[in-house]
Length: 121
Image (cartoon, rainbow, N blue to C red; front, side):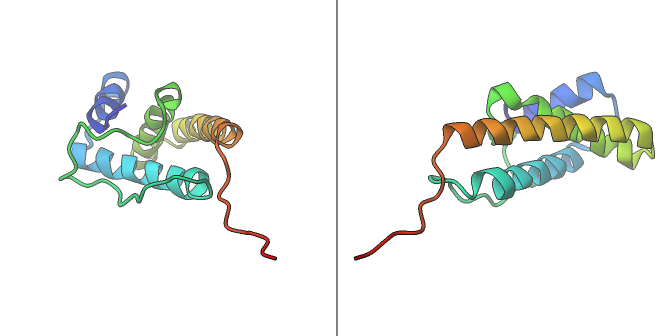
């Protein structure tokens, strides 16, 4: 899923007044969390500098397609929080946390951990 696809998907299911720039910043926060908490401890990761208004909309997000629902949940949670709709926010945040956990579980099952320690003789 790309940045533009995530923004369009969110806007289609949850009409809102927030700008594309707001949503790109929120997607950057979500991918930053994915990078720090899931990907960084594992081998073969590239640097992640986040997204801003100059990032092309065709930029792929970090989560594989199977787990892209977490972006919709994250954007929905941010919109609900900013709107002061705290019951909806709790529901959206809970869904995001479940999907984030599912992504973390899958990644840890299918990738090798970082091998920083070595025994030298």
